[in-house]
Length: 188
Image 1 (tube, one colour):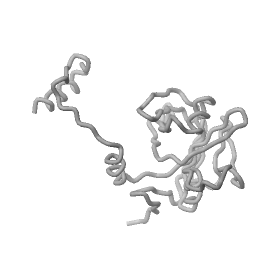
Image 2 (cartoon, one colour):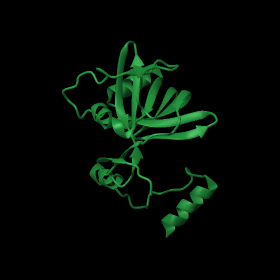
Image 3 (cartoon, rainbow, N blue to C red):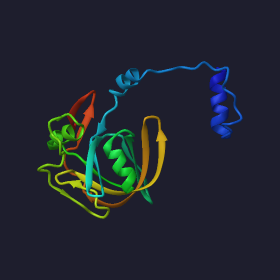
């Protein structure tokens, strides 16, 4: 009960540094337990791409959300030890394609499930808008983004970016990922 009261006091006063938590129990969580629990979360599937000094790369990402319409801001989270992270960090820009149900194979390619494919962009039609980041033709929507801020978050980096150009109408069937499987939305 004391922990709850301390939490509420901190929440309402905003005085985080003044509250001591040294006598509170520390609970640890192993990554596999969190991964298993997160399987209950459903999310749309995107591919984040970047281009820097004629090198392009991309990866499947479902850690994405819109955070503001004015100014137009989104956030993505990328694992720090990836090639895409490196290119987004260097170029300060990325493209985001929201995939349709017909693009399951692209999600698998950019998730690295097709190990035999060295060039993920081979035979893939892309276009660019403002930043030069490749956007995948056939997606439901495209966001062309300029990185504004970054935050280290454990093994990931949280990128907050301004959307400098966007296309898409919201029509079509989005690709959904839930419990380690792809799903399609259906009308109830």
